[in-house]
Length: 108
Image (tube, rainbow, N blue to C red; front, side, top):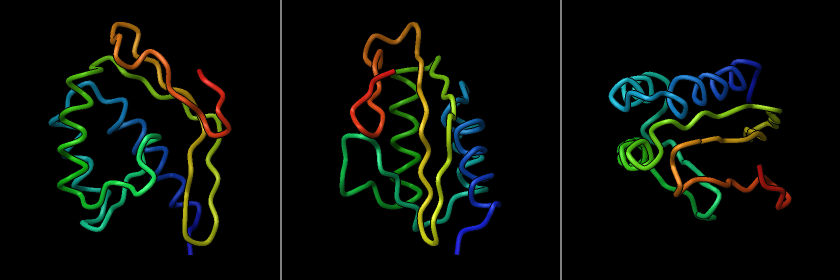
């Protein structure tokens, strides 16, 4: 069952991994807080990306494509087995990631 600690981990993920400009530091935190069985569900991948090592590969690619990305958390919703974040991502100088889609189709 997920607890408040789970939502705190999600907040830490977006603060110290996703919004981190230093990909090496982001991967260090990933090693610390994510399990080997971690499944990441980016907006364009319904099946998810399985495994910590695969996710660190994604982080290297994504941080290279959008090094100035900053995530804002508007809401974290949790049930007994899942946690989801609603919010926005801004990457002012990264043309490839100028718009991110939120659940429900709204863009920010």
